[in-house]
Length: 184
Image (cartoon, rainbow, N blue to C red):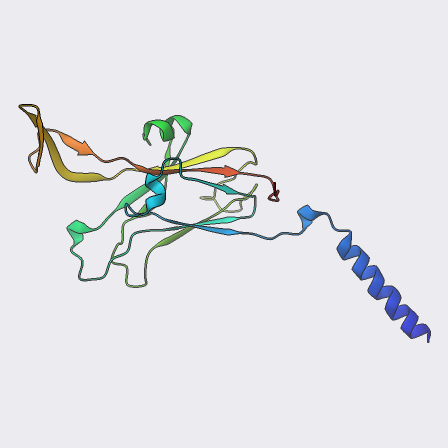
């Protein structure tokens, strides 16, 4: 009979230690996906943003095409992490740095995927450390091979090089919260 009592004592002790854990010590990570291409409607609705917590992941999927798609019709991007000024002006040259490059649209193994883990400290030299309560910004630019002409009050399009039309950049804002999401 003492063995049964000891078993229940150990079982209850373990159960109480599990229930007594602080919520922050229960690590559960969420994964968020961003399909980085000009047909993604989330980029054109206005303020595209994602709220993440420390230990969450972001997966960025580059454009991918079948082998039969011509190279000149594919999308190629260089993605930058920038500060707020670079985000609001769509300028990666001020205080931005290259994060990833979507440069293999015909990859035989499917779309390129880049993953970002939101962590306070990173053991990797190319990793980035994120702070709770801060916003981070990702942008890229792409160019269209059409040029805009103004003649006699009308706008027309051609492939001459009189004035280059720059399309809006794809961008989004990321807010890093603390360790846990709170429900409202």
